[in-house]
Each structure stands twice: as structure tokens, then as C-alpha cells.
Length: 529
Ligand code: AHR
Image (tube, helix red, strand yellow):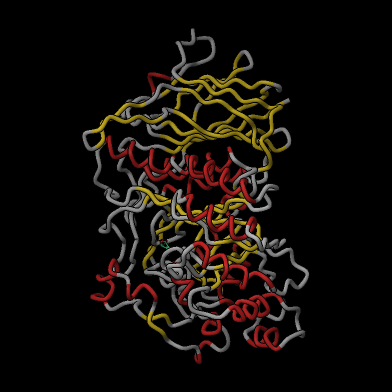
């Protein structure tokens, strides 16, 4: 990567020709960016819950009521808005009743992932094959309360009857003293309801969640969603949507729900989940330039998926009462870089993954009317983690810093913005391909405009000119995340190898000039008049 020092432009010097341009239209709002776009996903798999979130109340590791304290503190810093649990595929094997009541009496079961061929190593290690149910609904609710996040629970459609869904809602939400399940909740220490609004009706129902045909899943969905006790809450039910851009799944489900001879309307049906993983054959730490670009390009496909799925849904749901919930996303590499062998799907996170996460969040920001929630897969010791930890060792990955940089967008008004820089051309597996050079998003809250951008060019900095239409820039500050080595990542020995740094910006003639480092994520905060 090139040195930045020689490319800075100071006020008074003749400005060289810019390589990239950002134009923000302060008067053109695209809608409000739901804070829930910045959510996280946690599943009972490998090291996510046990070793990651939950260390137990008697642990020597600093904890709040058994929850890893470092994790809670860091999640508060980035204002985590919502956390999804207990899966993932695990959700459709989970009986919520196993995880409530006195911990000593909770049953021990084989974990769902024990049967997964990818988890063979876990069998050999003999660790975390069994679910102890030490972490259940009460512990998850506590984790959410500690971090300030809303809970988002995924119900079991494959292997529990619909009545158990009703019962779980009642356990979580019925008022203190009102029902037997509220009394059970109080026995566990939670007199007051958890007020869970968001519920997933199954997970990947086309696969691990039951291998349903869309018509059959639609019939199940009607059954599960038809009578749900709401306890005065505005419940938000999320249907199990497609794998990637499977339009057939969406068309056939929506046809059954909205346009069949027996149309069905449910005011609580608000979300349609989409999962998009990338890079399944790539390595987390060993890669060349072409793989850098290809992984970013594959992550970028979520924008097309959002547009295509939205158009398909709108053919049946004319009012667009249902919005997209991207509740699993991230680059998912081949195994071998997990910090502990028992952490199945655990992987290292480089600066490349920070760019992948940032460009995904920018896409969400650009479609605030279509996407109402995003939860990154997964929070800790898993695919696109914000944190890696094992026993007392803990680190924040480059992804954590991205969520910190982007937190200012939460609840902001998305603004139309144009980003332009030369395209990148590269050769991947013998085929020529290309990717945009710079893209991003902008939003406004009061007199502060937050602009975030990704420079995918791994070698060249971009001298960038930022113009604001419809308002005047009075002040600017910049932050960047980048590294001299494209494989850079954080380790227990060097936990802050990759982290944010202040970025020099120059305001003159109403415009901002800055040098965007190669292979970087940048944030500008513009104070406007
Ligand atoms: O995130 C890991 C797994 O990927 C989830 O359990 C499942 O929903 C998806 O296939």
C-alpha cells in the first residue's frame, strides 16, 4: 500500500486534480435509517454463547451476572440496538422450556451442531457438543438489558408445536402476576416482562429449519402467526425468507400469503429475512489482491438481492407492509483461523472484512425504506465477528471499529449521495471482473451530517473532494480504519493492530478535501449551517 504523507493537501497549496468525488444532497432524504440495521446475531454454536457471551457468575473472568463484562462494555460503546438469539439452525432444535427455571434442574441435550458434518473437529475435541442450557431466555434477556439492546428471538417451527410459540411469547411478555408462565419467569428472578417485540417464525425453513417447500412453509407460517398473544405490544413477526436471492422461494411464499384464493392478512407480519454469506471457498488470512476484490464484490451483491426481493414482495404485498430483515451476513471462510478448536465457524477478521462489513452497512443505509433490520453473523467467535475471545483473552476485531464508526447513522435521515472513483479491474480465477472504487452513504441528524465511505483500491490512496448541496459545511472531522498490510488483523498479542485513527481533512471554499487511504473505511462528520 502507498504512503499517505506525500498526498496530503494543505490549505493554500495548489490542489491537485482529485481522484474521487463525493456529492451529498442535504435536501434529498431517502428515509430514516432504522437503528436496528446495526444489530448482531448470537447462536448456540461453538464459542459464541459459551466462552463468548456467557462465562458464568462464578467465573474469574470479569462478568456481569455471568455475562462477559468486556463484551457488554464494548457493545454499549457502539450502541448495539438489537441482538438475535438462539439461532440460526440451532433455533429449530431448541425447546425454550429447557432454558428456564432453576439452572441446576435444566436438562442437558446434544447440541444441534453436533450432527453437522462441518463440525467433525468439534466431535473430536469433545467440547461443547452438549447444550447445558445454562444460558437460556432469562440469561439472554439479561444480556440484552445490560447492553441496552432489544431482544429478537427465533422460534422453533421445525420441531415444536405452534402452541409452544404462544407459550414462549407468554413467558416473555405476560405481565407480572398474570399467568403461570409469568410466575415461572418471576421464580427465575424476572418479575417484570421482557417485552420482546421481534420474533422470527423459524430460520432457513428451506433448509435446516424443516426443508419445507414455500407453500408448506406458508401454511406453517399462517398457523404459527395467526393467534399470538400480544400483551399490548406491537409484535413484529419475521418470516423465514430466501437463501441469497432465491426469488422462487419469495414469490411462492408471498403468493400463498397475499394473493391466494384464501389471502391472509396479519398486522404483525413485518419482516422477511434474507441471509447472504460470501467467500465460502476463500481463506481468512491467506489471499492475494484478486481475492480481496472478489470477497468485497460478493458482499456487495446484497444490494441487488435487496432490490430484487423488494420488487418480488411488492408484487403481492402492494402496500409494502413487510420489509427486509437481513439477519445473517458476512464473509464466511474455510476453517483454520479460529482462536480455539471448539469454536466452530470461528475465523479471524482482517481489514478486508472491515471493508466488507462497512460496504454492507452503507447498502442498508442507502435503502432505509426497504431494510428495517440487519444482524451481523455472528457477534463473537464466529463468522464475521466483532470480538474474539477464549477464557480470559479478549479482543475487538476491525469489524467492531466499523460498527463504532457507523453508529452515528442510527436514526439519521439518509441523504442521497453520489460517490465516484475509477472502477477496479481484476482477474479472478482466470475471468476478468470489476468492482467500484469508492462507495458509501450519508445521513443527517440535526446539524451533523455523517458520511461513510469505502475505498476498495488496495494500493492507491484517493485524493477526494467532498461537496455538499443545500447546506454549508462549517466544520469537519475525519476518522479512518486501514492498515499497511491488507491481511492485518488483531491478535491476543497485538489486540489493537487494526483500529481507527483520526484522518486529516481540509475545509476550504465550502468543500472538503481529504486523502482516503488505500483499502480503507472512512467517516466524515460535517457540521452544517
Ligand atoms: O451462522 C451460521 C449458520 O448459517 C446459521 O445457523 C444458519 O442460519 C446459517 O446457515
